[in-house]
Length: 313
Image (cartoon, rainbow, N blue to C red; front, side, top):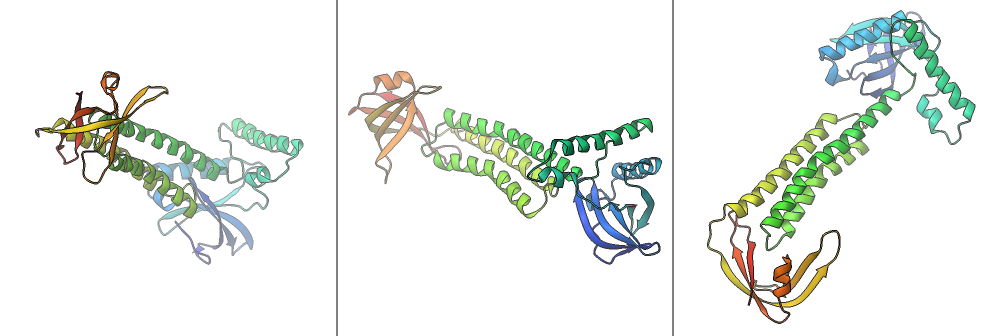
């Protein structure tokens, strides 16, 4: 639940937003009765009606109430207002863990103190029968960003089968002009990456997770659909192929992981001077510069012309 400055929750007044992450939003508040500052935590809007999150939220309150340690913020109360729940916590001033680690120089003893601080909390939690390591910092936001970045890599990898299928379709039914197909494939692949990058600039890393995941899912399906269309364009093509005659002007062997045999021939299409494509080794060896070759040109089921068998005179 997003709160504005001046909002009253019982005896507590909202002063400012301290931070937000995947697990909740924390505000600085003022206890109007006891005249002290407090920290007010609430669930994000998307989880306010989630029973599992509400149960965990209640569990957090019970855990904090059961513990008493200098390194664990005390809980004062649990409030409900406008259908939302709020934890009223002790307000502790000071730097966050990210602030400490983000400074230019951190002495060794400071790092050890930070580790001992966390270990001390963990020991207390274990002796209380509860395993919960809670460092007072913006670690929740950092963890959310880490998980988001890992998910981003996973979703990018999920798009690779669609790219592979497109390349296989183009290899099986080589289009006369492959640039539109390759441009479409590249555009679909880069669209979600660019959209998420823009979202991260405008929003925090933990926001909009569902939105960009949906974009990745749609892009993955679009890549597969494009590959299926290319396969059907050649596989369902029942048109009678036309014969095109062209003169070989250049032969090139491209060495690499996979050797490619490339021919450059005079173009039979209006407005073009030459055509360039890969052929099998046997066709390449039989082709002679200055001599003609014949190509089967298919219209394509979806109107995308593709090249069939090549014969050498």
